[in-house]
Image: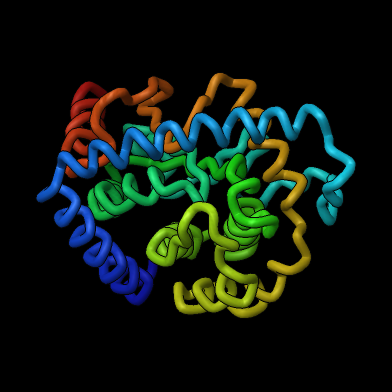
Length: 255
């Protein structure tokens, strides 16, 4: 990660942490909202699975059903970030429209930055797109994940910064999401080269996004964010600063 990119990311993390602090001051409300979010996510999952299995005729097929794996990714759905030899591997399953994922990012993004920088953790980002039905027909989750995969393919050093930037500008669930032009602008501001941004519209990785989303469901993933530490699901608090960091550092100490 470049110094300029790191500075941009730190600024975004600071804003997210301030939002997380405001949430912590009113924990009762956060708890209620969190329960509503969880219910909404479960409904969205059921809806997405039913829609996928019935293959409705009222929906146009994606631009390409071909599964093209990003150069810096793999067919299982992981895009790795960080040192290959880091002692701990952290997997994060997420949807770019998922509000719970946004809360996770606000609470833990800064700490994950640090753990990446000091070589403690290697992160495997696993984007999925089960909330397409919640973006008023624009398939925002797929478009955002396709853009992320394009960056992972053509500018892997910018993937983490772009990931953070998408959450710093996360649209509300149920809205149309960000437009293609807005996604492109965010990518450029995050340091993604223009020639890579220009490839977003090719929708090269739409088939891959759909494939890894189904594989996530098939593997037992039931909601987002789902976080695994060295293959084991983390069951602690992912919406507060500290618990995840402690678990990762503890795992590193056991190596």
